[in-house]
Image (cartoon, rainbow, N blue to C red; front, side, top):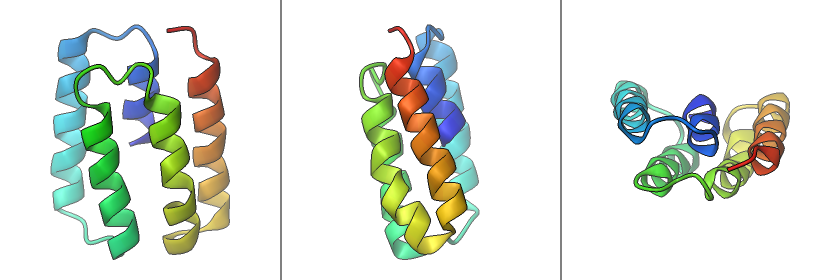
Length: 91
């Protein structure tokens, strides 16, 4: 998810971004994450569809708390760093 959001923050072709989001959604269907994380990931995919270039940092920042709650604080820190990087990337 982080890679897809950072790709949306860059200058990636829209068709390629759509393919990436479909692949992430397919991978997520095969997993069974905790409910808060599952809802956040589904919202993140929805938030990045279309023109996600300006929303990448916001989408990633919304994933920080569920990641900390369901996975680990260390992973949440990595997602937070990615959100900062997406905010700094020129659109």
